[in-house]
Length: 286
Image (cartoon, rainbow, N blue to C red):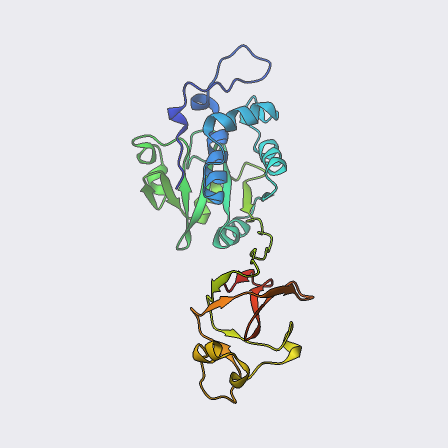
């Protein structure tokens, strides 16, 4: 898990606009750190450091006098990184459904009811823990969840935050709209690409392959008796009248190759034709 604590970033400036006050991520950057935590954990790598996220927030006008305008920051992040998207809500039911599907959310602690902070604060709704919600807090310190009324408002403390039930979560965010920013990461699809099979080169079959008379299943399968002597030796069946299949691990020398209408790559060997690459499942068999 990627975790960052804003208390560690007193050296990264995060000033309010149009003021002479000097502020840092430590003093005012829970939103910056929350954005780092959620983006990096969803994608599974450090896409942004805290320093980079603070700069990104400032450059995109997301720093305001109360801290970070999360709506502005997430819009800018999703424009820059279109594999991310988000929706806002005040519904704990919608929040729970989103977490169960593998998403994560930024929760907007308000001023009226202290669960995660005595004032406005962003925390991460990381995942479900049974019927409760595991929270990652970007401003953890020793004894935080032992103070005020927090012990009675959480289920239990964790290393980087706490676990809280949906009722207490709802109370913490009741005076905020939006209360939750539900963030989703959609992994980009990799383009299907056939292997660069070289005519005249010898390859090893990665799976059992049926042998055909030509390109396409409509040409019909060959029988074992129609294979070369070496092909019959490597066939899965020895009965000459059976359909011909070559065993996984068979060495084959490609004499011709051709794509069919569906984008599958067929390869010809002395014994006949077989599918060397299937586009639909993006899988090579040699």
